[in-house]
Image (tube, rainbow, N blue to C red):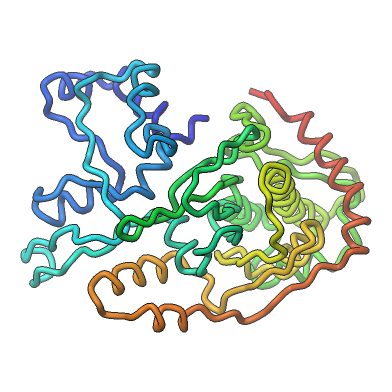
Length: 364
């Protein structure tokens, strides 16, 4: 899928002459965003990346736990491409140059978006599940010290590493969530995010309207980056409320799909998701996910657990906070319980939605 770094990097090497020339002359450094930030903040003193960031690029092999040199050769990438040294998420990454902030501040944590969220939510034991509803939807299942080998496309990535302890997760994603709601607001389907649930519940159902959330294609289990985004089933009786309900229902259907894959491929017995992200403020969406997946949703009082997780790793590394303090910061402000009778009602809707997805698959 074109969302991975590997095919994008290959495109850049083949289509940007200055880059290919710089690589040939060994005057180009590859890295993730964290690599560039540390490189610049330390005045080019450190050329590194953390394992959680590099493990999601498709040029890191989670089974060998090193750069996937065979895959890179398969892609036709140059042998002399410079790669950053891989470090744990908690580490002494150096100090910022004094010219930036007036002091040499220690850089003690580098961690991916999802890894930081998983850490902040406290999903550190095997079998725990974290659901983020933000820019995208990410469902992550903790497999502890072993990467998961998936046949449906769950991505085996490292959530974070402390000292020698690596925590792997099997991750399924649906790329477009928050941006689709922003788009709906621009269309005039609602004015304020707080009113989404009220608008949705003003109608009994979606009136046979379905939405395919595919601005960036469809990820697992479809793996179709040529799918189109759109509504199916619009009719003269369709209102804005029906359309908005169809959009939000599609988010829940994608989570249900990903969870069904995880149940099929793992030995999961969990009945709880820990939930964060800005879109988790939508009560209707959370209740529908709970009903379909038959799990309790533990919603944090702070939806932005990514920032907290990154801060906790840095604070632990520097001794600013203890593990007990970090644990006390994880507060649950509400628990949503599943309604089994509602799942039976929605299964038919889910099957019809899957049929509508087929209509817009391979569109481009």
